[in-house]
Image (cartoon, rainbow, N blue to C red):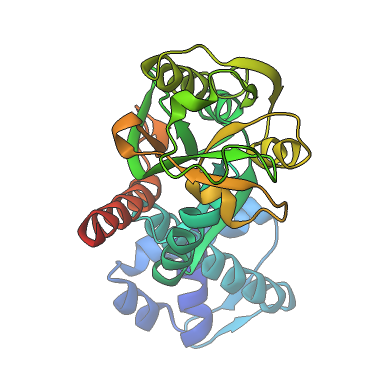
Length: 299
């Protein structure tokens, strides 16, 4: 049973005339008759009663007409959806982000993309950088907002956000009121750090900052989440270096000292598979890049 046979049957059933149906379908009458005959052979039932003067539906034909219309409509809808998916108008995107990206970066990009692509389903999940890389490589994710520096030969990564670092100290720390605070003043402090296991590039970057300041930090506690680092700092476990934006959502009281951008900046990138062919993914990345452009213009 083929779609063209269904279309031919519906055309005859609507007009109850092989002549008029053949004209509407731009077919010869013998070709149309052959299609209807083959359809009846495939189904094993007679759909139309016809003679020289009259064409009418059998009981089986009347029932089959409803089903044929439905099948043709669904085939048309499937084709429409396939074309829209190819153009990036509908579909599904699986997107992961590090916690800090959820504060300043991801929400507006997601909101703007939903406004532009209302037919696209967005699945959002909070994942650490190393887990995002794995998800992109194994195909369980389409897009990742991850902490930089991160590189992989099978990924395309574009910087879309950068911000200064801040040093955070326990409440009442002796350096909190220091008029000319500098990172090297923390050389003798215990450090809480976002662990290398979860964001190796970020960990190495903060270690380099300390090395540039002339010391190697004494890390007493690593954590997989930056807000946990803030909480541990608040109760006196140690000091920490974090991107400025993570302080926006914390509820713990800590002392904050801004660090100069000359020491480095914290960056977030949007990552996709290097061989990603999807127009939908590309549309999302293009939007994310435009947000970076707007951010640069403001700065």
